[in-house]
Every structure is written in C-alpha cells, then in structure tokens.
Length: 328
Image (cartoon, rainbow, N blue to C red; front, side, top):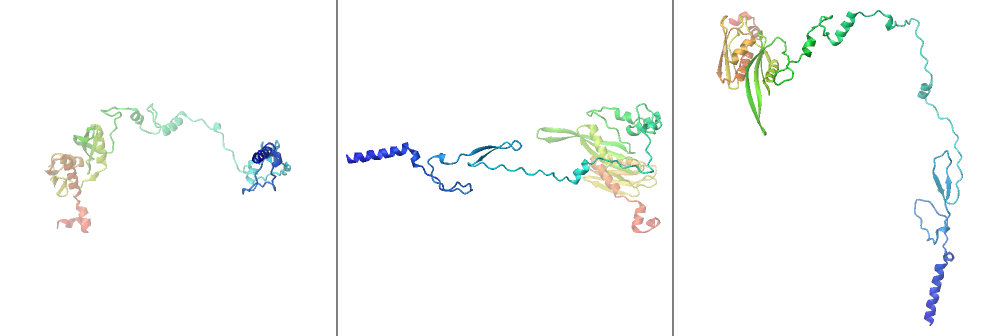
C-alpha cells in the first residue's frame, strides 16, 4: 500500500508541473547581447519573457523600409544640414552664356554664294566631266577619250566566261605556242584542264615565255600571257639584227643551239625556238633543237641560251680595254 501511495503522489506532482507552467519559469540573467560571437543562453520556458519588437515606419522623404528594435524606440535622427555641393570649373563654364568674339578691325565678310556670277553650261559640263568622266553625248570639254565609257558599259561574252577581258595594250604581241588538255586525278575521278604556252615580245629585243592552266582555253591563254609578261628578258643583238656570238642552252632534257647569221639569211629554226626568236625581233639567226621535243622546255632553253649572250661593249668594260682591242 505504501508503494502505491508513493507512486500516486509522484504522478500528482508531475501533473501539477505540466498544468501550471507559469510557476516554474526561468529568468534571464543579464541582457541579450547582439555580438557576432554566439553566447550561451539558458533555456527559456516561454518566449513571453523577451521584449516584443516595436514596429517603426520611416519618414516619407526617406526610403520605405521597416525597422525593428528590441523593445525601445530609437530616437529620430536629426536631418543633416543641406549645404550646396561645390560646382566644378568645367560645369561653370558650360553654364556660362556664350559670348562670340568681336571680329578684327580689318575683317571683310566674304561675299554670298548667290551674289557671284552664274556658271555657264560649259563650266558645269567640265566640272561634271572632271568628276565622273566624259558624258555619253560624245562631247569632251577636257580632251578625254569619249569612248572610255562605252568600253566600260559594253559587255562582250565569250565561251565559258561572262565578260571577255580586253587585251592589254602595252606594245607586246602574243603568240600561242601550244594548248594541251591535262587531267588531274583526284578522289572523285579526273579533272580536265587546259595548259597554254604563250610567248610575248615587242620585236625590239624584249621577249618572255609564260605558261598557265585553267578549265577553259581562253582563261588559260590569258593567264599564260600574264605570266609571260612577268618573265621578260632582253635579247642582245647587233645592228644586223642577229646574235653577237654563238650560244647553247638547256632546260631539262631539251638542248638548243643558237648561231649568228649573215644579213638576208632569216630565222632558220623550228618549233618553239623560231617563235621565241621572231617575237624577240631577231631576223637573221640559226637555231637547232637537240634532245627533247617538248615545246615548253625548248622555249625555256632558248631563253637560257639568250641570257648567256653578252654585247661586245660589256666585255670590253669588264676587261677595261677599248672595243677595238677585242679582236687583236
């Protein structure tokens, strides 16, 4: 019985603790600190012991924010005295009114555009021609070529090309030596192209050999002519339009022999050698192809043989003697 009475008394004491929580509250010792370091606080039985935060609305002129304080309302801050900001020198200059400077004493205002005499039609046409070229009417006031505009507008069509290029008028004549079809084997098959060999010369001692490839014959000839103009050489000749001395040249497997000839002999040669000598302006010479019959190699071998030749005056200058002593 005593044990039962003790257990009932214990249950009644526990029930009294749970039903009356306000009798067993713990109080804070000291104030709540807002430092960055966490402080060890005792356990609180109820949040009612903490002061309730007061809601304060900011002034209308300030930003619309809500501030929370712990219990006590913070005193309103006094507005700072508004002082005018200092104005920089550049801003002061911008705000200053513009006062135009007074003209000098000897200043004479220029005449108005409308006060001058009117331009004539010829002056207007000359100014137009100076800027845009001659007019389509065919009248030139500056002495320009009246057909230059027609050559720009005229469109000539050629095989495989939209616009046919005009020949360059620089004093050189062109002669086609050979046109061959060449193929290039690629992964997808064979690509067909044309190779053209062209010799250009002014028949006054200037000659050049060029080669070009393209998908069309006309384009290949044009490219080879441009290449030949880039490889111009000078052929030494005497007053009888022949070589000063004999010479031999080779290029690859082709060998060419050149010999001077007496007046009236003419050019006795064949193939590419004859074309190169005629375009250079040689009228009396002997030539012979030795070895390969390839037209390109023979033409280049002829150029090599010509480059080996020297005039008599050049040899005399190198030796330091007059020309008359060369044959002694």
